[in-house]
Image 1 (cartoon, rainbow, N blue to C red):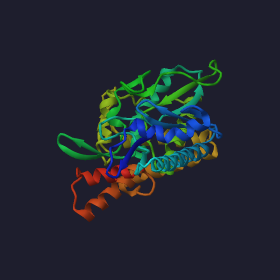
Image 2: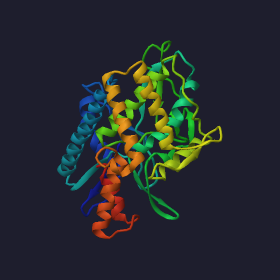
Image 3: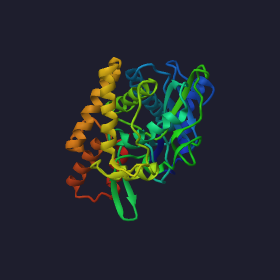
Image 4: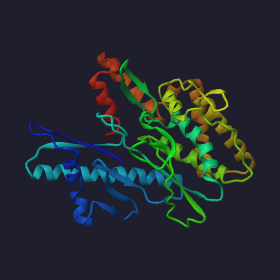
Length: 349
């Protein structure tokens, strides 16, 4: 989902609904609807709150998914250009902006949902027990970063989405957002396949982060589908508190409590999952793209152990933090300054 806004020169501000109508006028004239399938198999439509949403077609490789994700950006960019031309033709002089982010200035959140087609052989709870601690801790290399305004002042967080998650598993997507959505629509043989709907993730600008984020889940699902594999229990005592605590700690070493009473950091948990995947790779093997994701995963975890800020050309939250810090230093600004908030937003433009 994309955020939208329009800045006008000396005229009234357009509402998001009005901006969305201008954006989708070209779509409606072509498809006679604001909800269409495109020639590449993707779906383009207006979601709740006048958010343009681009859903990639079903992909059978991680690289293919990254390509379609970037294609969605280009398609929305073309709609933006057409919308500005139509505004100009009607005498409205303004600039339309689309933001591939997850929060707006009013505190609303919109997502970047991941869908995986998995085997129905095992009970769903056996997947979620493994995936929830994994997904809660995954933000240390998959987060998009955010300057969060709090009662105690501004702070930089690893994840945009973490503040808006309230449950581990549920069927909701907008009210009480879960880490994993339980609505099961496999769009395949429902006797054999299940839809795994992950809604906790941030929208990523970095293709590296997108490949890593999805590729690592692909590795984990391959292991979950293998009856010879068993995972150690990393169930969290309170996943919702944990996801926020991890997001608020840029060192990635904040410890969170497991259901067993042990305390581990997100880095510890990810290192354990990585080691399990490395062992599986030696024993059973992954395909070429999964092996690439595995190497990227190992690179990121090793870098985070030294210093997370080393990942300033790969991982979104680090890239953005370095940009913000350089801008602050150049202009002598506090983290909570409105100009810094603008840089935070422009990263997703």
